[in-house]
Image (cartoon, rainbow, N blue to C red; front, side, top):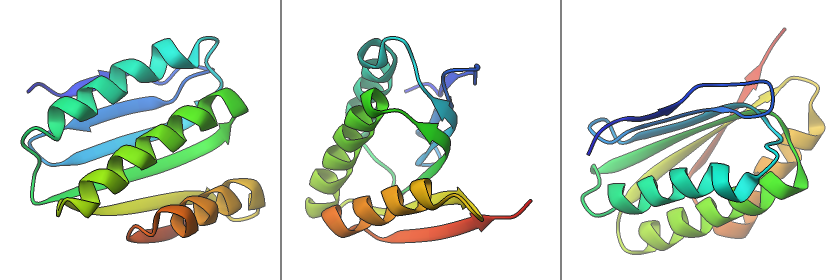
Length: 126
């Protein structure tokens, strides 16, 4: 499986899935005009990745902003991660938030409490 890389744009985050390292990164603003089309490519790649995952999969979520349309698909990713975690595929979710961004922090807390996955909150300063 090849590395999936989607460059960051003004309305879409950087997406990088490196299957050889077991790392998925999403970073930036998520307000795509068609969130289903944007995120289905990533979701499909995640399904392929989980055919033969690394021992531990690390997720880096560093969103500046997530609209409601994107939130639905991020939730879908967490359902997939939780299903795989319950099947014995270890993971670590790194949730990044800016020091005064309570909305992104609270969203991460919501996902942590809902899915009971190993979370690490990383505050970004400045």
